[in-house]
Image (tube, rainbow, N blue to C red; front, side, top):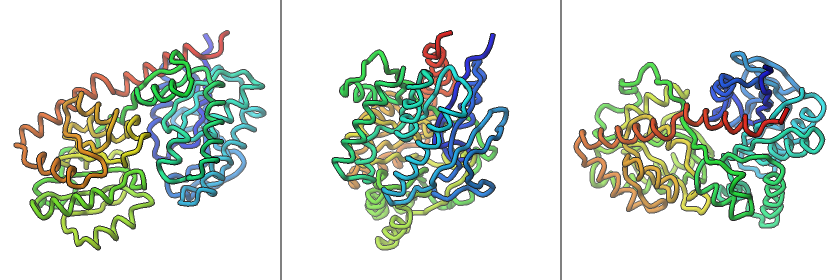
Length: 408
């Protein structure tokens, strides 16, 4: 029989850092689909086109047996709302043209949704080509635009909300990453039967150096707390630096490591210098395979987001990576993410934005015997394997793709 053909539409794709990239597409193809990826030219998170790539109207390539079509975009991921909107809109227009006039007939368009405009191009193309849409929502618009400070205009956010409503009506089914996302969509009029919760997972390949202490980790540190990932306004990590000041005055053997990049990295470094923090170290971004080495060598892993209604219904992707690493987690996020850590019994939850509470929870974890810390990590890993694994998530996604593909 002919394999069902899927167009995987996403503005982000390898070599850009994204959860559902090449490894996800290959795993989905292994379930019996023919897949074409339609994406832009890689420029995230820096907003500069990656070395070895040059923007042109269209470029076709093959990545490990997967057909990839790259379309021209306006690259930008800086603080300018206008330039970032231009980036999203450019992909809307180039992907819409491609879906209408260049793409082969597909049985399903799978929209991976870090941005609204990718979904809208699929919805507009559906008016003419009638291709069913499976929408995978990773970022709740317009809520995320306001929560991250990217856009403050109520009129603009209202316009975005209107287009979101159009997209939800146009798609055939919606995948969300948390029960809170599902409840939020239902409250906005999306039928419950149209929404499925498929928890995100993490890449599960172990790095070659797992078990060895990375050279960047100082040997004299008694207890290492690690934050790994994007450092932006939403992470509100200045509060964590304030907690580091409190902790340092009571236990100088506890070290705070911040690994990654982002728009707030330089301001955070400046804040650490201004506070005279001797227990804070900043590490650069490393490849995903190396990240796992750092996670495994840390004593505790931190998640922190500003206390915002949107973040109470989301689960930061690093949560799954932390649980898979088998290390205690300090979850300073309210809502679904905290409920996950509590259900797993994998660590402690702190009040986001409250430096004193965060400091107390860190001190409490650092005071635990090594066997108790190890037990927290084991429980987290066991919960991940049973409820959040990649195999489980891929199987759920493949079943939904088969169910909602074009009939006949």
